[in-house]
Amino acid sequence: MAILSIAAVIIRGFYGIDFGFIETLLLYVPLAFYLWRQYPIFSNYSPNRRIFFSVCLGMIVSTITVLGMGFIKSPIYWFDALFAYMVIPPLGIGIISYSFEFVRRNIHMRHQLIKTEKLQAVEQMGAAISHEIRNPLTAATGFVQLLQDDFLPKQKQKEYLALVKEELKAAERVIQDYLTFAKPSLGAIQELNVKKELQQAIKILQPMANQNSVEISTNFSAVGFIQGDQQKFRQCFINVIKNAIESMPGGGYLSIGTEFSRYFVIIDIKDTGIGMTKEQLERLGEPYYSTKGSKGTGLGMMVVYSIVRALNGSIKVESAVGTGTRFLFKFPSSNPAFKDK
Image (tube, rainbow, N blue to C red; front, side, top):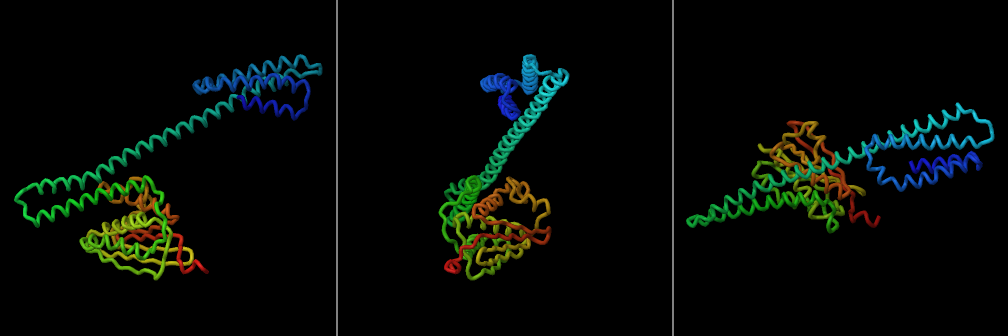
């Protein structure tokens, strides 16, 4: 209302500086100041009351304006004047007030929806993290209890200690994934040799591939460098390769290759696993959505997408049920061979 009052004065000024302008100035400027001071109280009213108050105030201002017209010596067409001042302004104010309240209510509902979604996300993440960490910790606790047996053979002690270490590392990976997703910003930026980083990721996961009868083949280009965080780059592709291996429980083939150009490095990862449906493909990378159903949290792929975005890269996924899945990663190149050209 205060803004509309100032606008009314400005618009009236375009029609000339006369008695009508002075009347508008004397009426609307104090009104704008009063409304500005009363806004904190006005904003606490209910929406219907705010609309009613605005229309009533418009009627009062229109009445004062019409009464002031009696001091004008020029002839007045009272029917037109009453319609122009007593009908149109209050009606317009009512429509505008209703529109403002409608928009305000929608914004409030949107904020409430976002708040609810955030709370649900926190609950889902808490449940997912709790589930993923509890499993390895429970297993580790069981092996620790077995180690308390004084008559346990040395060989068994070594086996159980190795299993405890493995389970604790699994819990650590879950926490690391969560921290990466919560804070996707990169750490120390350095030039990464894509071939060497992928070879390191494969080396870490080779025992898992052997256990699942998965044969890994590679086809790396001679050169290929990008700028990035080494730890997060490795974490990203460990997650991708690990998922690919897990998608082939009965064995299969996993091919990993790279291509490079002056501007981009492309990483191609293809498996012969169970594949994904169209719906699964569309939801891949969404918060807490996992293609493994109740066995997964979706945190690993969320981390992958988060890291790729932080590295200014892109992901393209192709998949078909029973055929397998193909990931194509594209990153800006920083090949030394092109720096001086």
